[in-house]
Image (cartoon, rainbow, N blue to C red):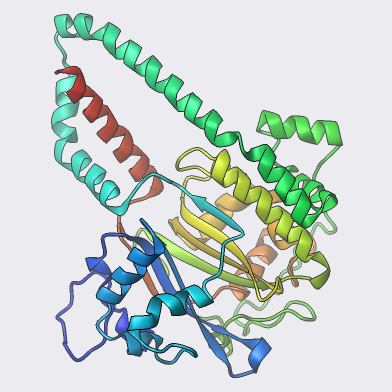
Length: 408
């Protein structure tokens, strides 16, 4: 039913007034959105729950009002959910069931949907002419404008540095709060696990050196992955769960690579003895992503638009929701190359995680795939834009605006 409702997220198909639909293309606020159906094992073998995730501009009330406005039949989407009483109480219903993120990375915290579209239009419409103009400036213009542009560049860079320092200042407070909530030992050991393979950064290299921190030796030189890749997904350890029964007959179709971006929805079961550890890891990741990560890059990975982690069901399960560029394989390969120890820190508290973690890449990919949930609906407001494209568009638009100001 959901796929039928959301099968025209681009607004290109002929409309049938009798068919319920969510007209995401009318939204001016939503960056990405998805619906997925999860099993609900705590409430019974045949129980399901609906997952809705969205990244949006502005406040929650405005977002929910827009969501109502672009949905032609709210009951067709939300009616099967317990406690749903109609569109007029939709905001109360969502607030009662909303889950707060434990860690949340946003590639561009100051970028709106309209701003991304505007910058893209500027680049597409004017770059060719601007490139030609900049390629052959007159000698007099260069001499006259060189000094002001240099001063402007220095001023802008100083402003950016000051903004970074102000943004980074609360890191210490974040650390104190994390230790108070999750415990000093969990914060220290969780952070140590994260940084073990990040020696390319001086601050982490110094931390690893001063604490003697490093990746543990591998337990085996061989992969622990099962050889039968066509077999149905099955729990990888006692207590592990497969989050979607749609995979019961074999590996499901995840409907990937339809546009430039893909979505990843993971649900893993957390070891009951290690809930506080993963909570500490999430706090460290959230602090870094919020305070220190530069626009468009998370520890060197420039393919993530949004990614969040949530501990749900009183910490029994960990959910990851990611919107990223490129194929699933390249995304996981880049993660494993750039932040291998970070992957271990996140998921080594989950049941079924490979003994050698992300270094056993085939087994790690099997772990992720078996805990992945297909998206019934996936929407992107800018389906042809990568993170790097957006970086270039923003840089171009800002440079053009600065050039315009310099001529006045």
